[in-house]
Amino acid sequence: MFSLRDVEKTYNGRTALGPISLEIPADRTTVLIGPSGCGKSTLLRLLIRLAGPHGGEIRFDGAPVTPESVRAVRLRVGYVIQDGGLFPNLTARGNVALMARYLKRDSKTIAARINELTELTRFPADGLDRYPSELSGGQRQRVGLMRALMLDPDALLLDEPLGALDPLIRAELQDELRDIFRNLGKTVVLVTHDLGEATFFADRIVLLRDGKIVQEGTSADLWRRPVDPFVTRFVQAQRGPEAPV
Image (tube, rainbow, N blue to C red; front, side, top):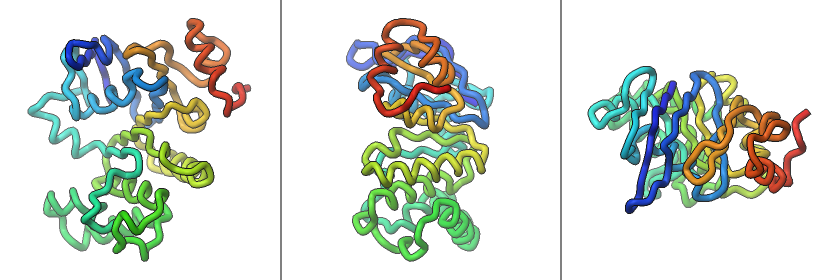
């Protein structure tokens, strides 16, 4: 679904990412993981040109992602950030419907889609007319997910979507998100710093360090077949998960 070839990103003359080459398969969940500052969120933003690369090429569904094509790409990709990234002056319903209304979709179609998403995400229907400040953290994250899914995108990008939640709510949403990913069959790219969370979600894990890909594979590959000492240190520092069988 996404293909990167020798992609590089710099900030103030410093290389933040790359050059890297990476294939992100369709209909699977790919998790980007690594320590703070490793470039995983930068990579996610590059996929839909929220930041432009300084070198290399990014393709989506076989076509280059360029300034001219990026609007069409973004309409096919949902994007979720920590705590939902909601507009505080809009109700939950207004946040979810925002892009559909901008595209002048039929109001009945919008209402029917919101009902579908409310059921899918287990969001309370009576919360749709509340503002973000009146919702819990878990509810705001559900609204952010509904907004990302509103246009039925081909791919879904999530940047630390559960990082701000307390452990009980986080565990509950992890279960729900994994079920949603499996049921919808979307291409998912998720950023986290937590190996346990990566293992829970991922069909494939991409471990980054200092803007470079260190290792790709399953969680078992990282545990049992580390390519260098950094991978071993990173895995051993993650005290939550047990080694995969």
